[in-house]
Image (spheres, rainbow, N blue to C red):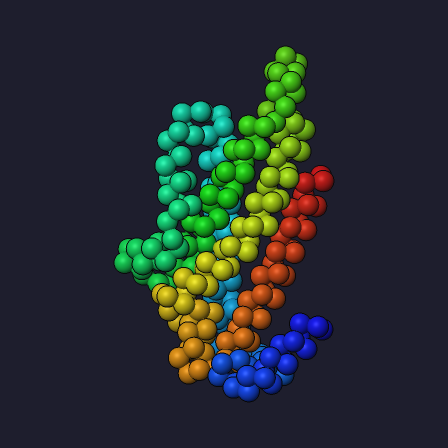
Length: 233
């Protein structure tokens, strides 16, 4: 409530809807947008691709992290790729992927590339810090691999994965929508944000931003809830 009052006060002080739309105008614009079919199409278009990129990047990161742990030479082979993915600006990947793959699946690919290093690094680090004594005990008593993973590796890995998922879920939305703003696929959130900027519709810009925040928070809550529930089984 305090932040809304500060927002409204700043809006009254600036007194320019183009520079800063107030909360009431933003809410009015948001309610109007929610009556338009195109808005739901844009939300669905972007959500499918961004969440698809998140899930694909997560699976790849976990699998390759496990392989790098099991086969140490793979960790050395993957290291330059991970450093590159961490260091290269998202905008550079966006431009390259626009040339190579077009703009329709751009947010999917960018989300995948952003999420992958988080899951790979946390998976590898979590496995490397697992208790050696427990691993040696499991080998001595010939405990099956499925039970080793469930009772030794996963409990230690859980915290690393949970933190990685929290960060990756936010980053994939930020980078995916930013990629759409640059690549301009039709019927996407990025396209809606770009049109709001072109026509100087600051209220619409804020409304799109609120929709992204709400949608990403809902998906983050549901995913992490399901992950916690699955981890308890």
